[in-house]
Length: 425
Image (cartoon, rainbow, N blue to C red):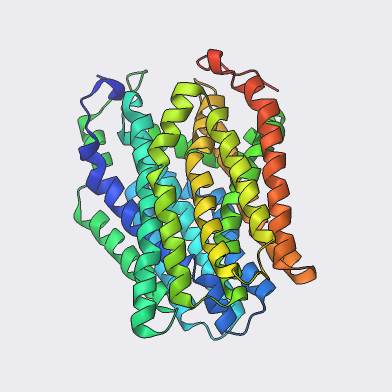
């Protein structure tokens, strides 16, 4: 019997997939609001603090290249364990960093490990979850990730209040990584169970889809990008804009808080509350996309993010700038939450049915390029102009992304024909 037909329950992946993901995400959520603050405490300018925060996304982009090969060689469970331990190394570097540049090196290591952990987690779910349940499982996985980003900042805020030092956030992530690795070590490997049961593929040869996923991605990433350059340049550029707006938010909000004098613990608390709004909407976004079409989720999200960035750009010097910061942070989370899962869903819609893995790897790499570029651009614009100008430019990117999606989503993912193979560019 093939894997799509076997009995399955989400409970069967709750511990091996969801719990380590929740732990790792709590740790990551704990440090993201704090990286620019720690850089500022170490003497970095606002622009340099933004650059150091960008190293997280740059590390993920670089890590996307070898991560498929790593996972295919050592397996999903081992890759997640080693990625968590690599994160610990990067976190210790951050915790002991005597200068902003050493801090940046540690953040880069954390980004590399995050890329490997994310791919291993994705490959695990691709392998273990039958196709019929996969969308629900991945949607739940996305919700677990957002839950971590909701919980993490609250832990950081409380510990900063107790200890008086923002570096305590790195300790939270260290504990989270060790706990995730411990859970993975303690639990049996579901992939070994699958192999022991010799669940066969269509050709009758025992196999797992996750192994095929990562191997194909590792060996054909840049070739696949070239083969699908039409759709990746057109619709993929819109995906990069979405990713840029999302990662830019993670850098912009902490930098803004530093620039207007909000305390470290209050910054973490505000971003944590905003993360709760983001988390609460992940299921609604999926419902909107499935019932009304992809644009009904993507367009409100992009317009909302654009409005949020633009509003923020006008509030820096207002007497009520702290209140405006809180409102905009929550509004940006509302806009982002409405678009939860849009990139993953569009990637699945666009991928060839017979051999989707290589395209999905190229699609993720394209989006991650936007994630990595946005914080670097914010840092550059802050250095040569101001943080307000950087926020205004991000607002323009939101409108450009909306225009791209409005033009190309109906062409490549026509809603009434969404089950048909999308046209090649």
